[in-house]
Image 1 (cartoon, rainbow, N blue to C red):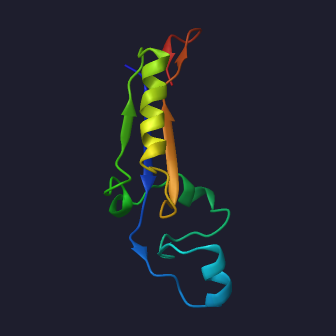
Image 2 (image 1 turned 90 degrees about the horizontal axis):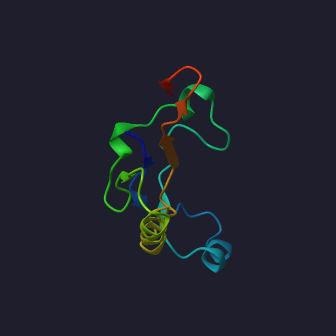
Length: 110
């Protein structure tokens, strides 16, 4: 029992909307993500607790599990591998990090 789950919403990458191409191209040459995630800037509480299943576990942004009781060097290797393959990419709309904790006084998992 335990460990860490890393999950993200990653909508399809699209060409950026033309606004001021001269400025945009001098700052960003890649693709943009769609605006249909339903939030921009600070989301409402109801929307940030919800992950859209249509955008979860997509190619490049697969859900990743890091099991508990692994030696620290193995955890670091897994995190470095995610960093090297750009798991957290410009197309990422939201990342959810889930972990279980044990409350000793209540003898319960939270």
